[in-house]
Length: 257
Ligand SMILES: Nc1ncnc2c1ncn2[C@@H]1O[C@H](COP(=O)(O)OP(=O)(O)OP(=O)(O)O)[C@@H](O)[C@H]1O
Image 1 (cartoon, rainbow, N blue to C red):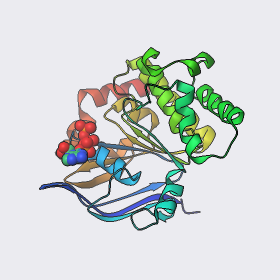
Image 2: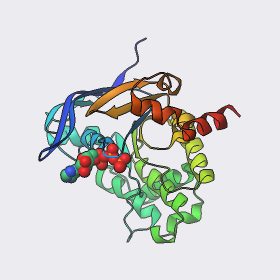
Image 3: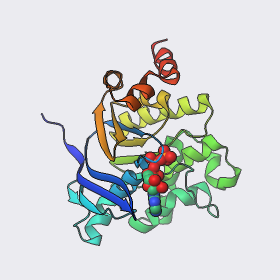
Image 4: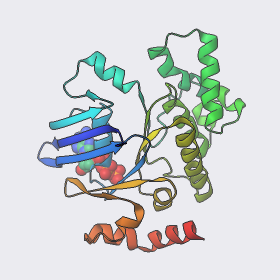
């Protein structure tokens, strides 16, 4: 049975003034996969993520998200597709004036018609799913460690029980043990919830531990896609340097050891 494409991007162009970030970029994301998006700093990974989730309007191209042509759809259809996704930003992007539970409840308040008791129970379930203690629900973001803040951001991204999870540098700033725990959590959630994950990262350990497929952004487009092993055979100088550098060897050795 052919695998369903849940995100299809064709001919995507993004420009800021004279800077062309993407030009005629194409990429497909398949249901149930963890797709890692890598590329040099400034290659447009975040701009790509923001284009897919509707936080910016591309200059040209077509993006089909869960069957909806997001650039051509009505605002209501776009919002309906968006509600089937969750986004976690690098710093968690939590509302500092709200507790963790209130942060997780925030998307539900907008989209779900549920009573406050049910909403609270759903939020507490998300908080437990990401491995935070129940007491974390009453804490404000400022009281959380970096690793807890990431998990709280993940709990909020899971608020509406999404089909696709978008993660922007989820392990940036974490110590290696916390980063590795986050990788393990991500895979267990993907397996338990049947998520598709679009993961922007520089972290080779995370790529090795979590990704089914990797997409490399370079020259304003997706230069190549493939498994971690396939990346090692790509001749492009940046790809070669990235996947053969000392950090790549360390990630591979750790995975094999
Ligand atoms: N709102 C904006 N206005 C103008 N230029 C922007 C805007 N957002 C992004 N850019 C530019 O687009 C390019 C790609 O940015 P983006 O943040 O997507 O890169 P990235 O690959 O995620 O980088 P990094 O790995 O450093 O996070 C950069 O040159 C950036 O300056």
